[in-house]
Length: 569
Image (cartoon, rainbow, N blue to C red; front, side, top):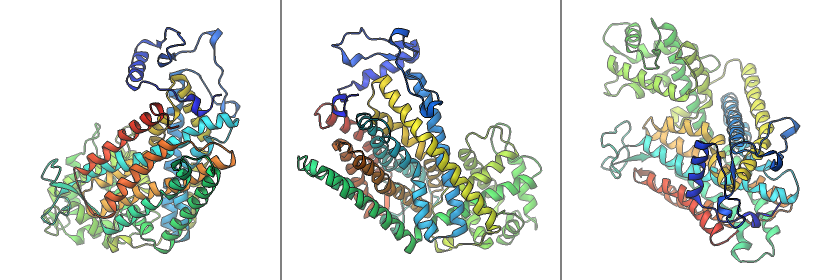
């Protein structure tokens, strides 16, 4: 197999997209076969002719493989979905374990590593097997995932969270919670975070140091000392991982915010589950729309004094009557959160219309969290109640950071460990087949594997966290926005330290060539721009999302121009 430098020929982006569309419509696109026309390589959607049939190697000797475009696309989607399920199980198990153990050694050391495990495994297997030449070619997939995850989190996800979480900016240029009357004003709306979120952004900025160390010989345009630079970057990467984890152990505000969210979200789902049982009918119609008649019946059932408004005492009685299974909540704190969500008139009571609108909002959030639940039955609410243990809210108030006791800790630990083992097993089993499918898809379409992994793999490993972040940014409060963006910056930090450390270990132990100048440049560009952008301010007007969005296509264009026009790599 040719080396990476030999593989890098210019390829036309627009003709390639048109070719794929035509191929999807007509079944096969075939060039004129002229060796002088490399831009129009054969893209086969069906099996090649018997005489020209290419062989593929089955993962583990029994998993399916193919050399066709559609076949490999199907395998990428299937294995990508399995990696998504692995990430979901790891997230659920980590959150449950954090509830049991509380902030400390487990939450600070183990859980951040588990959160980055799917990405780290994909990076590892990208260059672990095969000859050195094969590994040098496939390791582009690992670099694509490294760059793609970082850029995805800081551009597309960051910008989307600004849009869905925007509120009106007040006279002091701070976002007003729950007030969104100015539409899509680029300067009059935006989001605000707390100062602790800017600390997380600064930590993210520090995490790019290993990239700079590894790239230093290339900056000096010398090949001498490159292997030593990789080794130093590897050591610094894992030292930063250890430092970041220890920082969370001794400064556990990050863990406490995650824990507070998990409990708050479980309160919401528990109320919906209880309401489904108590209501005289189903909370959702057959088409998935909230059943307003049943919601109003439920309101009248809770309104014991028939005053037409729910007091704090009546809400407290509702909370006391709910069985929250494993977790024992601060009931008074839960009442405060319900008031925050429902009492839009700020008169310290929840009127009937406020209750109806608040329940609709909760039910719609539940539907967005459970897109594949099928019929909107009682099972849907139960599924959502279970799903809430997998999501992360971002609450900053000191009352939100309280840690409550956990009932039946033995069963909870067993459940958490089971989820973690299941997620780890799925990730370990299907990381290698996914990398093989991406590499085979690259060969079939003649699209460089970096671009495929840059775009596709982050969606598999980060989609669960992305959906959660978007949902809770949409709650339009400073405290939820703060933890949303803290979670984004934390994900980038682990990607730039732990996952990069695994990648550097692979490069060093297999004696591969460090030839990723353009890829490192876009990671540094996006991280440095967003770090400077977010470290010294706490309010982000709506126009800032446009800056984030533009960095994503700009990153792809930079890699294409530098590698395929100027021949950097």
